[in-house]
Structure formats: C-alpha cells, structure tokens
Amino acid sequence: MENREIARLFHNYADLLEIKGENPFKIRAYRNGARVIENLGRSVEELVREGFDLRKLPGVGKDLASYIEEIVKEGRFGKLEELEREIPPTLLELLTIEGLGPKRVGVLYRQLGITSLEGLRRALEEGRLEGVPGFGPTLIGKIKRGIELSKKAGKRFLWSEARDYADDLVRYLNQMELERIVVAGSFRRKRETVGDLDILVTGGDGERVIDHFVTYPRVREVLSAGTTRSSIVLENGLQVDLRSVPRESYGSALLYFTGSKAHNIVVRRIALERGLKINEYGLFRGEERIGGESEEEIYREIGLCFIEPELREDRGEIEACREGRLPELVELSDIRGDLHLHTLYSDGTSSIREMALAARERGYSYIAVTDHSKRLTVAHGLDGRRLLQQIEEIDRLNGELDGITILKGIEVDILEDGSLDLEDDLLKRLDVVVGAVHSKFNLSRERQTERILKAFENPYFDILAHPTGRIIGQREPMELDMERILERAKELGVLLEINSQPNRLDLRDIDIQLAKEMGIPLVVSSDAHTPFSLHYMEYGINQARRGWCEKGDIANTAPLPEFLATLRRRR
Ligand code: DGT
Ligand code: CA
Ligand code: CA
Image (cartoon, rainbow, N blue to C red; front, side):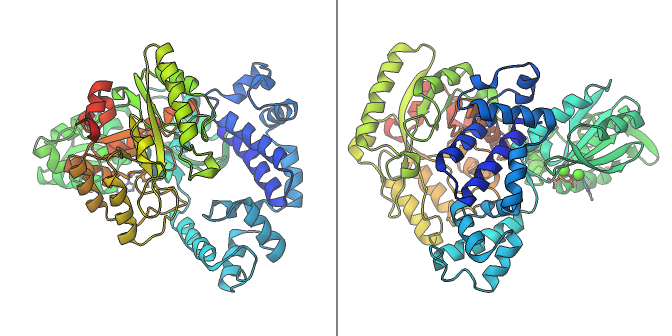
C-alpha cells in the first residue's frame, strides 16, 4: 500500500473523530502520524516488511505503530471501520468543500442529519441551512460555490498522486521482460491533473502482459482484459488503460496516445498535406508503411521538429517549430535555490538548519526562509520580535554551514487594502520579501487587482507568491486582471512565483506562458513545510515547462549573486 493511502486512512480517522467532537489531542496525534507517513520519503510497507521499529519515527507511538502494521499486513484499519459504523463515512465528502471543516460538518450532521454531499445539496436547495448557528449568508454562499466547483472538477487526479501510482505500477510491470514501458496521455504532457493513465508497452507476449497487469495487487476492478489491451481501476479510483503494441508501431502509438487530441489533429493534417497518413499503427504513404518506430522519426518525416510532450496542446507549438523558436525547456537540475519554505517558526515541521541541510542535499546553493507573518494566526505567523529572532538565528547558521546560503525572508500577508502585514522597517532588513494573499479571496476583480497592485508599490515587495490563490478542485483562482498585474510587475521589477505545491500549481500554465512572452522573470518555489516536500519543486518545473519556460526565464536557476541582482531593490 502506498504511504499516501495509509496516511489517508489516518486522516479519515482524525476527521471522523473531529466531526464526532472527540478530544483534540487524540485527533492531533492521528493527523501528525498521517503527516509523518506522507512525508517519509520511504515506503512504510517496506519498513514494516523489514521489521523496522515504527516507534522510532517522530510522532509515532505504540498505538499508531500497531495500527500501521495492521493496515500494511491485513489491508484494513479496524478502529476506522468501528468508527464508520457510528459516524457515516460519507460525511468526509463534505470536507472537500471550501468553507466546511470537521466542526461545521459535525454541526450539519447533528442538527440537520446531513450525511453526504447529495444531502447537503438538497438541504441548501430547501434553505434548511439558514438559521443554523454559525452559518451566515456569506458562508452559505461560499458552500454553494464550493459544491459547484467540486462538480465541475469531476474525478480527476493530481499529477503528483498519479505519479506515485504510475511509478509503482511501472515497477510492477517491469517484473516481466518487456522492452519498453511508458506512461503516455496527459500524464506525459505533465498536465496538472489527469483523468486516467495510458500505458504503452512493447515486447513480451501481449496476453501474458495483460494477465500480469490485471493481477496487480492494487487493482480494485478489472474493466476489460483482451489480448493487447486492458483497463483497470486502482484502489484510489484511478483508471489505467494499457496497450501492448508491436515494436515497429511504438512511435506512432506513443504520439497518438500522448495527445493532446488537439495537437494530434494538427499533426495529422500536416501529414495529409504531404500525402502521408499517420495513425496509431504507423506512418503511411498510400498502403506503404514508411515509419512509426519513433516519434522523432515521424515528426521528421512530416517536416516538423520534435515537440516536447508538455508543448503538445495546439498552443502555437507548430508555428514555433517552423519559425525556429521552440523553447529549450527548463529542467529540475537547473534549479539552484528555493525561495519559499517554512520552518518551525510558523507552520513548518522542521528547524531552519534541517531545511537548509535538506536543501543542500538536493544540490541547492541557497534558500530563502519565508515563514508566515503575524496576520496568519492559524500558522503562528511571525511578529516583529520573532522575525528578529529568526534573523539572528539565520546569521548564526550562515556562519556555521558550508555550501548553502540562507536568505532572510518572509511570506508576508497582503491585507485587504493592499498594505503589507509587517512594517517597512522590518521588511528592509530581509533579503527577500515574498507577498501573498491568504484572505478575502472573493473580492471583485477590480478590487482584487487594485489590492495586489497596491502591494507592488511597497518598495520591498520582491515576489508575488501563488498569484491566483487557487486550490485545484477546491478553490477557484481569484478574479484578477492578470494582464495588468503582469504589466505592472514588469514595470516595477516584481517577480512572480510558480508555486509547486501539488494542489496549487499557481501560476497556471497559460499565465506562465503570458508572463514569459512579456519577459517577466519567474521563480519556481516548493513552498515546503517539511524537508521532504522540498521535492515538490519538480511539480512546479512541470508547470513551468507547460508554460514554455527555458532556464533563462526562471530566476532561481541563476547563481546567488545573479539571482539577487534580479531583485528590484538591488537593480
Ligand atoms: P485525461 O486522461 O483526460 O487527463 O487526458 P488524455 O489526454 O490522457 O486523454 P485520454 O486518456 O482520453 O486519451 C489519451 C490520448 O489518446 C489523448 O491525449 C489523445 C489520444 N486520443 C484519444 N481519443 C482520441 C480521439 O478521438 N482522437 C485523437 N486524435 N486522439 C485521441
Ligand atoms: Ca489519460
Ligand atoms: Ca485513457
């Protein structure tokens, strides 16, 4: 079982306990346990198999350790099943709606007998939430919008989640002697969410491959199993289509199943213009097969350059190829520093030193510590006094540590009126000021835009973090005049962040492409709250690549002195 699945069981348990109104300490213990498991960076299943003493993990005591073993060994969590007989587990659906946490869901359950999303929808229609203590008109409006959004999002999976499952499945398929295994589709194009996985294999006997595929231990359901193709549904609900194709068709099948559909249509048309035909089996002139073994070959034969999967969206990639201006996309290994991360000072799990060492381990030469500012009380935001303490600690650490420079920073709240949550006297002492909106997401487009432009006027404002504020599947991007924001950022030298948190990925690819065209430097940042989650950087890089970015478009690919020189106050 994936760590993510194990963690999910503990999260569910904690949520149901909280809905029930149980002791907060107990709830926190399960949540912490879940977080430790998610961020372990090693398979818990393997640890159990190796007989590792789980109590050695931070935050894991005797009870939790025995539950983890039960889950891994027996595939069930008895305590959760017990609780689910008491509290309907369908209540958990409600927690994905913005504005609804366990406490409020508990109220809806006890006072109105609501047990599911469908029940909530009906209660809203009938106006039954009005008058329930704590549920004012603003909150009710927010819940209604949240339900709409979750309907619209449908059942898509974050790329990061799909990736964990894809990796494991590919490892499993590799137990057979196959020539090639590749995950195509939107996954290969690194879209922020994927509907399903499309796997191609070559070599090996088709039927045996399919037999092996459908007996993968994490299969929930086998939808179909033929001699060359099969579809399954995994334990988390993700569908996987597998096709076994002959070696000579590998390239054409890969091109076809990588998509996007829109890109394929253009490519096929270009082939037709040259009297050629492309389908998933190969490249043909009349009846004669003239190619299909590799994508490179097919693109070449029809007079195109090789186009990276991330660019195959019919967003100008063909013209760019013809005009010789296809980008050479940025890579994870180009990144030299991480400019947005949290420590124990606010809502991170680790010390500044631990974060710095983990960053050095990843090969970075600098990080900026950017804890929250005081306005964000839920995250223990820093006031002036604690920020000064942090500054001192960073000076000390910089004296001690080799190979990494720690920049002093803050993730300062942009308040409703566009002012910043800390005084200029404090901001002035920092190396990097990252500004972000964490409240009032639903101001009008005009006011939201003004708010951010006003924040830009502060001379210490360096980087706008997660610019649209969206949470994929949960919170819509703020209403913003993105073009005006980009124009002003360019005038003032404000940088824009691509936030790498798997459910943020903010800026969105189209905004990134626009920013790049306008020549605005971007940074890709992990927004890590644990040392392990520094690896989120990869997801932000995916996003940057989908936005056509080259190394030179991303400021934190530069060595420290050059990076600092891109900040407005040093220009
Ligand atoms: P998803 O799964 O919704 O995230 O998006 P995709 O792009 O992975 O779409 P999917 O799984 O339906 O199909 C995989 C690829 O197969 C798709 O990107 C292009 C190709 N494909 C599927 N259906 C068609 C079609 O009707 N016409 C063409 N030209 N290509 C198709
Ligand atoms: Ca797909
Ligand atoms: Ca598919």
